[in-house]
Structures are given as structure tokens and as C-alpha cells.
Length: 314
Ligand code: TXD
Image (cartoon, rainbow, N blue to C red; front, side, top):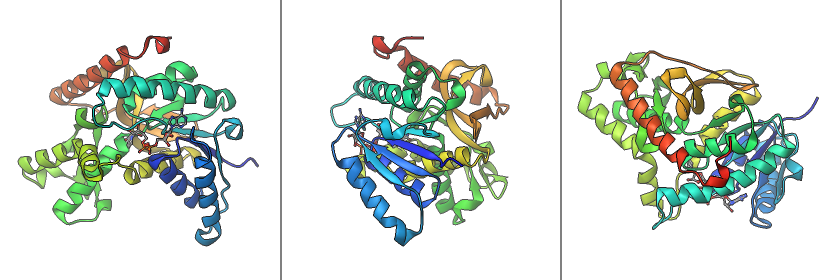
């Protein structure tokens, strides 16, 4: 039987932490790819040498090209810049679009049946770059952001109510970050909506802090952005895909009519399994929630329309 192979492109903070989690979680052999010579090989060797102590048998390899990634089941894309001082969102979009296009093109050529998990920011727009250059069906491209946004919301609510994070579940839709749409009536503690447990102003404050979650960490770290929680989010997606667990997880998906939206990448609950994004889990929204989601989708669409011309192929 063939072993599962997972490629992680970009061996920086998110990529290396993801590789670490994937190997220790025994999800498959891992190939770390980066443009920096020696760095992915060095990190891979380090991770491989931990195997006897932490008891896994996954093979971890590093590379600067894509030969070793051939026939991957999942390709995780973390390559690119995080926002730096003086860089506008537009600058980041165009710089990362070029990096992501180059990586995805090379990776897809040798792993035609893989599922791509996009992580690079601006997340929803980078999913579109992957769609354009890979030619993959929408089922085999998903973006990781919703798990991170809901995890942040769950962590804050658990602290607020002094309960286990496991007892809190949350639902967040929409674009990643400040345009996310939290749905408090579907956010529950032991099944009870938080709207019945906390005053509205506390919920609003926690939702606002969640939406700014990444920015708060960037300010504290000064040298980069979050990576432990993002890597945990990627792990959960890979786990559901390679083990065909069919978890319902919030991911960026290319909508084709669901939630009344088409031709745009938006965070929605979907089922992840061996075939990738196996279906959108639609829920009935109120008019106000629908309007918020449509606004968030319009923000993403406006960014998609500004992608560099050489990527504007259909
Ligand atoms: O929720 C989410 N989706 C996110 C996204 C959460 C956290 C971070 N998010 C974004 O992921 C962040 O805004 C960045 O766009 C990416 C990667 O963040 P990370 O913190 O890992 O950045 P690093 O540490 O700078 O690592 C990026 C690596 C670095 O080693 C570069 O050498 C490499 O990407 N890189 C490349 N690798 C392969 N091929 C090419 N062309 C390439 N260019 C840069």
C-alpha cells in the first residue's frame, strides 16, 4: 500500500510548525519545500531526528525543488510574505500572488490528484490564484482561515466563561480576519447559544478581539505573525482529508450558488474528506447575517479583480 505524502511549501514559521505537527501526528510522510537553500533540508533533518524520541515513523524530507513532492496527496501552501511595516494589503497581494502561482504551478505538475490547502495571505485571494494556475476543480482547493478564526473565538469564550475550550463550539463565516462574520446564535457552550449566556456587549467585544486576533499577535511578536494556531488549523484539515473523516470545518471555498454567492472564495462550513472539499454545509441565515456575508464576499471579490493581469486567466 502507498504511504500518504504531504508537501508543505514554505518552510518558515507556519510551514515548519505544520510539518512538525503532521509528522508527530503520524499523518504521513512530509516534504518541506522552500527557496532558501539548505533551510528546508536542515529543518527536515532536525524533525526526522526527533522521530525515535517522539515515536513516529514518518519520513521527513526537505528540498528546493519539486521532484521529491511527486504524487503528494495534499499540498499545503505557506510560501510568501507576511505583512511588514510599510506594506499595503495590495502590495502583499501582488507579491504573494506571484510566489503562490509559481509554487502551485510546479507542485501541481507532479501531483495532479492532490488537494491544495492554501494558507498564504491574503487567504481567499490566494485560493483564487491556486484555482487559476492549477486548473483543479474547486473540490481540491481549500483555504485555511475559518478554523483559526473559530479557534480564537472559542479560546476567548472559554476563558471568559471559565469552561473547557472543548465545551465551546463556534461558527464564523466570510473572509479571513477583519471581514469575518461571527454567528453568535450558532456559537454554543455545551449546546447553549452564547446569546443566552453572555450580555451582548461582552459577545461583541470578544468577536471584535477575534477579528483583530492576528493583528494583536503581530504587534506582540514584532517579527512575524501567528503560527502555532494556524499550523493546528492546517493539521485538522489534513487529518480530515487523509483519514477521510468528513469533518465539517469552516474553510475558504469557491462558492457556486451556495449562500446565494457565486464565483468568489468565502469561508463557509464544508465537509473535508478523501475527495477534498466534498460539499458545502449550507445553513439558513437571517437577512442581517446574509447581508454581512455578502459584504465580506464583495471585499474578497474586489481583491480578486485586482490580481496581476498575467494571472487573470480563466
Ligand atoms: O490564517 C491564515 N491563513 C494565516 C496565514 C495565518 C498565519 C500566517 N498566514 C500567512 O502565511 C502569512 O501572512 C504569510 O503569507 C504565510 C506564511 O507565514 P509565515 O509566518 O510562515 O512566514 P515566514 O516564516 O516568513 O515563511 C514564509 C516562507 C519563507 O521561509 C520563505 O523563504 C518561503 O516562504 N518562500 C518560498 N518558498 C517556496 N517557494 C517560494 N517561491 C517562496 N517564496 C518565499
